[in-house]
Length: 528
Image 1: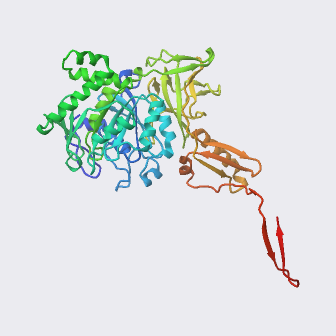
Image 2 (image 1 turned 45 degrees about the horizontal axis):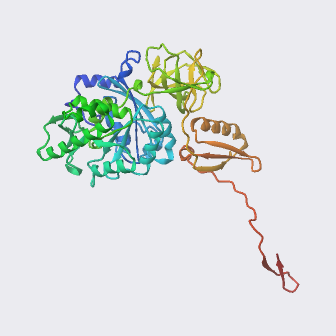
């Protein structure tokens, strides 16, 4: 996509008519019923702290026309990034809770979940990756593979999530993407290869060379919207040729189709290489590495193209459910969006909003319409869907129906994270649960007033439903509630209650006690 102008509220620049139309509609995707499964992608953006995840998501929303102006994390305009909707997130400049949105790129609907990078909020990453078909692993060109990168990589492996890698911040001093690639191979044990070569680094970063197409891509303009292509710079011809051979050799090791072409001494076409990358990524045998700088508006459009070309469609990911009525047999789910199959959906995140409990669900099979009745396979209760919405950060858009592959939210449904919903007349299927890490903080809490006991109990119950890491016990001796939780709860409560402890003797000791009694001689006693 090539834009000649862009709109910014602080400056009266004008947009082309077709872009104005997209922004006015909020980049609203086509009706869910008209979209084929091949035109849907469900992705997450995950990384270590301060690798640029939220900044990258902000650029994605801007270039796809979902938002009309870009804002930075803890920006000077006091607005903040779109996906950081909590006031605490904007104050601290970090992502605390995962946020969902959707947008359209080249007639394909992309559902995006922006996840936190701090280990304290790892449950948010865990339950997001559980329902996603693919992911973008963001790495810093300076920091490389860091501690939380290892954690996120393990979580992606746990749920068999295919991924592409995006090495960000090529504009920073000390940027070294080659070193990051070696760390990916050594520390993450990934079969990774670059599909881009940088055109300059640090302050001289201008663009990238697409190795697959053998074309140089430059990003210019105030917001990086002017994308131009040209021949490979003369000083990079040898390096690009070398990297292209490495890419083909690594793909030939994991893809039979390209291996046949390679062994027959033929030169693979662009379509052959792209198809081999797609097959290898879906099979989780290869990780393509892209380059850019989200803050400087470079490389984001190519990353969006890679999401469409290399990450899997919902139909290319095998999902299974457990049939509780047939002895726990595993049943494959059908991703067809024609509504011919019974509905199967998984709740993966809960929020307490102004209109009641908001339940995020991923549709795995069938369709769901407003007014339908669902059955919670854990509790056996039937619930009616009174309101169905799609989320854009903290904003909601009402929809009439959702189909297999969609990520949406329900209102007024009492459930817990990880519950499975099926059609009221469907078999009692249960989806694989979400892995819950062990809590890291234990506290003793109690209300200040006895009159607050009812509200206190309701609050504890709400936290239990929203946060799977939140465990509650009751001590009959101290009459206090003990809770074990992740640090995200302390961010929500914004205080640390005093902990309860019991004092007792560990061992017997002997000591001399000297005392004085008025009107008598000094006495000394030895206590054993």
